[in-house]
Length: 106
Length: 125
Image (cartoon, rainbow over all chains, first blue to last red; front, side, top):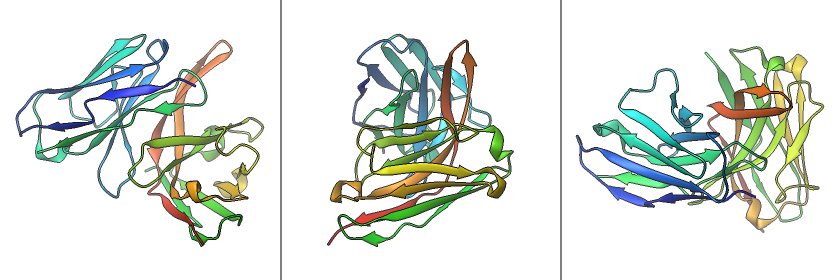
C-alpha cells in the first residue's frame, strides 16, 4: 500500500497568513493526488484534484503543486472559515490512502 | 444538487452484522462509481470499498475483505454495505462518496467529489 504522510500535523496560524501543508507519498503517484477539507462533525469537502486543479466553487486562495512523491497545499491568505483539518489522498492505486491530516488552528 | 444520505448506523455487538444504505439524488446514479469510506474517532479517513457504475467491479481494503460486501441498486439510486463479523476496530463514521475522474487506456483515476454526511457504527459489547 502507498503510505501518505503529511506535515505538520498541527499548524497554528492567523487570519491573513500564508500557510503551506506538505504531503509525501511512499512511492511515486505521478499527479494523482487530491486535497480535502474537513470541519468538525462534517463530511470531507473536495478542494483540489490531480494535484493542482481547483474544484468548482473553491476560493482561488487555495492552490496545490507537486508531482511524484512530494506535494503541497497552499492557502495564500487565511480566512476565518479556513480553520479545519486538511487531508491529502492518493488515487494512483487501490487501496486509495489518505494522509493523517493537518489540523489548522488559530 | 448532488445529495448522498447514509443510514443504518447503530450500536452492535462484536461478531454482529449491520447493513448500511446510501440514498443518492441529484445526478444520474447509474453512471458513476461509488465508494464507502470510514473514519474512526480521531483517526484519518480510510477508503474501504469501491463499486463500479454497473455493479460488476468491486474492490475492498484488506481490513474489510471477506467480511464486508458492497452492492448497489441502480433502479433505486441506492448503495449498500453489508457488514458481517464486526469488530471493535470497525467503530467509525461511515461515508459514501461519489467518484469523478477519467480513464486513460486501461487505467482509471478517480477522486471523490461528493460525500454524504456519514452514519455512525459503534461496535461494542
